Length: 279
Ligand code: PML
Image (cartoon, rainbow, N blue to C red; front, side, top):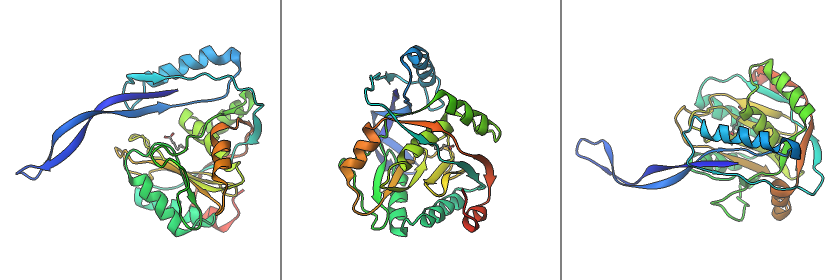
């Protein structure tokens, strides 16, 4: 499901005499409000569709004026994987949050150059799909840079979802946003070419992001950006020499389902991750 709405956005800005910016021209542009997907049994589809519509119509980003829903019969048997272990790193400011994300990514072997590249992209407003960046040289690999990569065909079994919800509840993190992001990161990191992922939500009201890797797990970073900021996006860091077509095929087309959940911790200190092997 993808929901969007039309907003008036500035076409060009001029400085008026009192030095305040005002819009000279504006045009209607479509902005993304919410997106969701999953792999479900046929018997659950009606209920899932009802929930998706409700969500699109009651999103804090505004009321959708376009909702596009696609229901596809998946013939290929989904591959079952584990969810990454979850923890939340203590953090209070965007400045510190970005620093933590950088340090974590460097622990996974991602170079400073590649991390800088990812943050530059995330800073740019309106990044659509995820970027694929090589972990050493910081080269972008996706064929359509505007569109990026949209991870698709991913879900969780009912029993794993029950386990996950109960584990996350103990730390007050049992939300659709956390579960969906964890499912996505677990699919991304289940791909042998991917070293790490960085995500900053593009939702102006959602300021928690994460770094994920096979060794570190899914590490949430609260306050990684300022409230109200529309900047955000995802970067997947991959090994040099990755077969990009194979990677995109896996991320966008291969059905993956989470069948088992590991630990879900509450708040941890960065040093607890750095000094001891986390998992
Ligand atoms: C999104 O906007 O969907 C991305 C959310 C990333 C962080 C989710 C979490 O709180 O763990």
